[in-house]
Length: 335
Image (cartoon, rainbow, N blue to C red; front, top):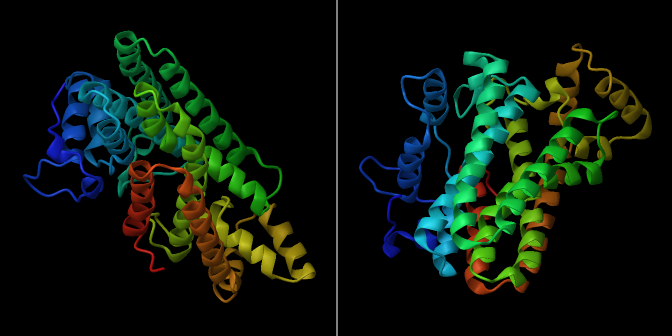
């Protein structure tokens, strides 16, 4: 495993951009991840390198490194844990693309579109297996057996959120939407930090941390929904969620702003999954106050995050605040 000098581990550098020749935390995590992949000459090796070629921001891996450094966890354990959670997160992305029948991930054709859903499913399973392998190494060395339990529970809660997202009988109301968003995103956003708190004997901070990150996950999902509405989330077509009838904060806020008769007609169409009239309803949403109401909801969640962050020690609050800052930068939403 590579060694991370303390100078690299600053809160200001959590979300540094990738530059050519820049030995950023992103580059280090990516390079170390490359060493974990199957041999290049194997089919799985080619698939995995294709997936990670268009790499993400490694937010979860960096959170583990920064938190580990802040709370005195060994650099090797921090790195192993960061990579473990990144592998689990990428497995969830691969499986999500299969479930949602999406073909684009990070601006490129995803594994499912390029190699087929069966292959993608198997690749996702491999990522999960590798994730637990890395976690087991830390457990063996640290004797902190609850670490693997934390990772397993995070996967279970995330899966439960995804099932609810896929199997709703009627379009979810706002409270249901927030519950889905929290379950889908919060566990794998929290576990890279909480794992380091476990290893450093600071479990007392996990409760307040989970509260903050549950709200942060809602903030993240609503931000993405606004981008989807604006056609700036990298999807093939603007406002693709309305075509798929996927839960979207802007759509739900539109339902909450229209009169009863219009809402009845919209709900009938929304729950019918009929392709016609998509442009009509999209135009209705565009000319409504739905986007404004969604931004207000986002600002309300922002205030809750700030309020709940008061229960965190400063160094942990700085880390969680960095996540929200990154969401704003990445999504290019002007608040």
